Length: 324
Image 1 (tube, rainbow, N blue to C red):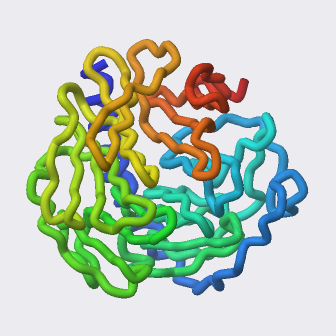
Image 2 (cartoon, one colour):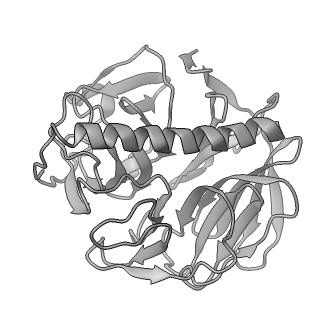
């Protein structure tokens, strides 16, 4: 599994390179077009005309979260959003974009990535926000310039923390940046102690001071808005990070997949039970902000698991991209 995760990182590196090549090619044909930001309706997915029933394959997932505080998980794939609601799957009818750096927030989601074939969004997306389930997206920063894969956004405070992979009009290559005002202004942060090949980053839902990252050498936590990070995991590779108001939940792999909840107040740790997985680990994780018993995660092998009883029982709702 160690080799598998390393290969996954290499695959990510390759996809970044390929993504960049596609970006250069597509930029010649796609012009930027501003989108208006509308307030979400809060409509049930089953009755929302923007969604339709989905029974296809779900692969290349780049994030999961409870978008818009609607009590149902949204999975960001290379061909648009997929939603699991009441045991059924739905997909967006339009704006089926390749969402990277996807982060669900209380009023919607933030994302980067590339536009789908049916979209007039700029390529790459830069940083976009939606409050209507992705029907419309609002351009926030560097649209048409950069595709951010390592980006975290606070669920309630909407603080943005990211690593910039390619020089753009406001950021230098390979540096970490923090915005506390919805991408209007940016501060470069030192990120001392974060010298690792990273897989993901996360921002506390309310406190801008708390940031986290997962990397090949472990899990890292910052309590000073990204100026310094401390490795908090004891062994294994870091695979995922997710904040609740009181805890950091992180995934690791040291021959066995693990999911750990650490208290931000007293640093006590508790292991969250995982289903049996062979040479696999937690890649993306989310917990329902209104029901801590409901959780879901996406594995490196493309499986999706879901629980409504606090991880006592996990349902495999997708296996290797195939809906069960």
